[in-house]
Image (cartoon, one colour):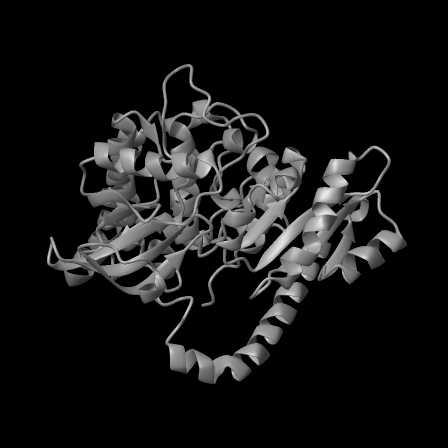
Length: 438
């Protein structure tokens, strides 16, 4: 499976940038798109030159209402962006433009030009996929010519040896990547064992630093077998790093590619509940609970990872700022989709989505855009479970009720219900067998 594309949104309108980000996360669930105001492009040029980007969505405002600095900053950046080594595909999203503006943008190096007034999720998807395919084809042809030089120098952008040396760690291979960090399988000299080493990329801004530091603080405060163990944290060559437990068995997303028994499903759900109980008892919400963030150990126990969005909460804390939505639309609670204050029941809703997916073999809500999926979480009736697992409907509803006051009170209550369900399910299997033996 290919890695998710690395995409930068350059757009002055924060609401439109958020809309784009959510659509991109629907197209590429493992992607973590970044956002930047076009007026900051020049000041962030050094940072931009360090990024390995696949695509840039560049907002350009041509109308009379657009400020000259916004328009000029966006278009002036095009030639430099398109001329970079391994240049990303730049798609211009134009406000108030015309045919002449389109021609100008394409001549300056844009891969495509889309008017914002008619922009739809499907058109964005087609343009982005086409631009990425063309870019990959060009890179492949260029790679054929550069193969000899690359072999001679031994340089490889994906090779961990090209990173600054990290004392006491030996990087073995990259096992994951997001817009903000790369994760490597590494050998720890201190532990004499393999670890997962998460290394931050050059920072975009304060939010990136806060997310990375927040993850370390959250993990350091939690001591539970259902939460990833942290071994080390530090700063090296201007990049933060966290050394954590490594999971060779992969994550729940990969496990869902294969059939899962009812017993396995309930056992996984119970273990997730117990891990959430520990997280919530520490006064934190995960806020991004989804199968890729649930790792598996060899003994089939589960471990929650990726606490970059985790936050402490109390009765008066609003964790989602107006106009800013974080998390995966597929697993997002209605209140999170609406930008309302969150509490522990928001994580339980995400657990309900995961349980539905384990039981039904599919997500409860699908859509062609992030907004469409989120809207279904808010006001669409949840699809029924398949007939052979219909007995779990009441409990799934107790986790996924649109009104959070109708959900389980907390993770401990959900765990108790699950334990009772597991016992009842076991009895329905054992009794027929005993009767037949008699």
